[in-house]
Image (cartoon, rainbow over all chains, first blue to last red):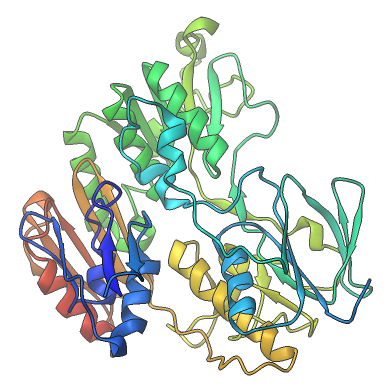
Length: 65
Length: 414
């Protein structure tokens, strides 16, 4: 299972980086950087990041290994 | 009723209602769930209505298509869209609907949300303006369309919706006037006068005429075509030919949709009062969630609070669903609401982030930057009796984002 961010929807608001700073961050230009893979034990904070996004730009791709 | 499965009514098809339904299904509740919504649309992203940039050339339809929130498809769940609940009899557990039908329920979730406050009801047209408010998808579509045509736009208010709309209107090439009669600038009630003034000058630097005090009051419209207070007596000077009506958008707060609940002995003084598990105290089979729910404030522990933010609707919707499941005997692992207020907007390219509860602060402290130059990055701490209760971050880009997140980590752990 991997994190997927729809870059067309994303407007770099950065709320995901507040919910889950280890997986999402904004670079100095304000652009979102994220890590696709995560440990199952972090699922709560990833789900929190998904919910926090005002543009619903984050999803979990369950088919990815 | 047929069968033994209880019927759960959810009034409101927004994200709070949808999340309550999802929580019930996740808990494996054996029930029939009916979601009633007065809009014709399934759940969509409300923040996206004003945060959405310029719609793509293929039209507003395509832009709003991307706002749909996927819901669970489940045979236990029925949607009744375009259906308003007129009245509720909570004792006999019956809802009377705008379709003329009634719906008997066993458990109820109230998630009917809020509507925009307006200075005048009616057909929203006057001799001078086309009046609009923005809450739903249909409002957003019509405002986007009018912004494309309107040369002159007046926006009453200086909150999130007002600021985001002003930003959008400038992108469409409109001439924008913002009116804030009561305060000095955007978000003053939350962030205080100094920050509000800084934001006001940022907006002015981006070409918006931002009027406050009497100057703003003189241009408010009461909806009858009269400008609310025009001491100079030259109100005719404002009148324009009907073909060139200015667009007048009110973004001055909201009103909870509680009217249908009257007569049931509930405390409806500001939304619907619930406990920290979203249970309506007066009725054990009724729950409330989303913008309408007024719950014990985990941030002050002495009063109730009502929050109008996306994540609040998600969290309280989830909790209402779980509490309901628990009331039916399901193992739902409920824990009391522990909300971390946390929001973001972008106004003329300036990121504005707010967290915690700066509203209750008694002082502020600049951690980094200069409020005279918000676009170079400013991080502000809000304190109450010396302890941090909130934080704000203004920037173009996100150079100080890691500093802000560090601050929030401390704020969260408080």
